[in-house]
Image (cartoon, rainbow, N blue to C red; front, side, top):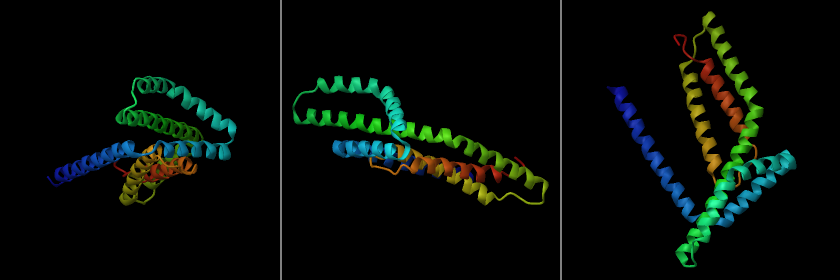
Length: 200
């Protein structure tokens, strides 16, 4: 009974937070200036070129452009059909802002994918090490820590939420964010797997 009430309360809080985030996203979309998104887009490209080189930056740009080309064509058609009234000018600006924001998200997603290709061995090694730590503890007289296991689960969730927020935040972010997500994900998986209970 208590667990059902706790689950229901968590579901209600989750729905409330999701509603707040959705309202905040719509408000940001309606009010953020296109100029701010342009500056964020240029800052991300410059930062990637400085840290990873022009070749890497061009590869990410080409992948993002290939993915977004269809959306850009549809946005251009929609903008051309609009007139010159204030509301139509605002809609044209919002279409342009949406395209910039989508390009930024896709660019960051490809940057994260690039770092993930380098970080997959780290994540796999952390998971396997956590598994063998658990197996060694099973033969020794050492019990797994449910607190550390719960910390690993919650930490993994927080890292996943932080990754999504980083992808969608329309402000310049340091390039270290993507490799930090990969490293913290490996750490959380190590805690999670290494402290699974023996009965599992």
